[in-house]
Length: 195
Ligand code: ZN
Image 1 (cartoon, rainbow, N blue to C red):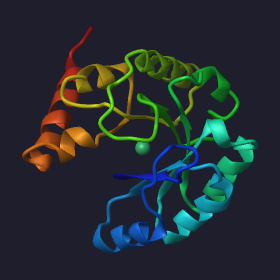
Image 2 (image 1 turned 120 degrees about the horizontal axis):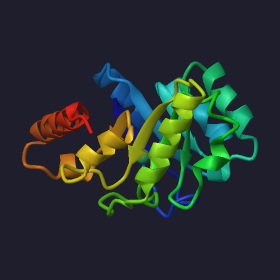
Image 3 (image 1 turned 120 degrees about the vertical axis):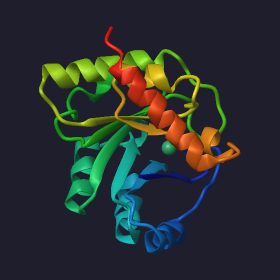
Image 4 (image 1 turned 135 degrees about the vertical axis):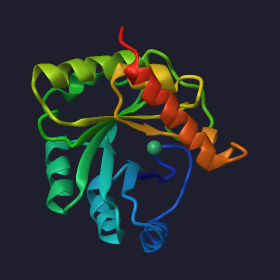
């Protein structure tokens, strides 16, 4: 998947891009486009990004007044629906939407910029989510975003993460494709170690 960070300059102090980029990406690739909406008004813009080609759309818990409705709306428009929580937001607040969401995105940095340092206690949230998922026999994926690289990918995989967003440690690597292969290998090996 390609993870596309959409920032509106309000929810986060930064801008990225709008639907023309999504439309262009769609023309160049068949990989799924995962849209992370770091915006104040996902109810207005989620359908616009889905129409432009977003396959998965995640919205921040912190901005959704009617989260249940927003998640269903995304699914009704034909995309996978995810909910995102910031580092200061508890996973317990998601209890009543875990049977609706297709994925939960756990922010391991504060959203807004690339190149930040991974916040270690995020892995406790991942473990809690993985435990609840098993207990309740639910099927949502767990995604993590921020500060991920070769130095921590093994412990992240072991905590129960399914989708790992990687930016700086790929795009600043001398050979980005090799950097991805190396991290996948490290994650695979970490999952094979019995503890
Ligand atoms: Zn993101």
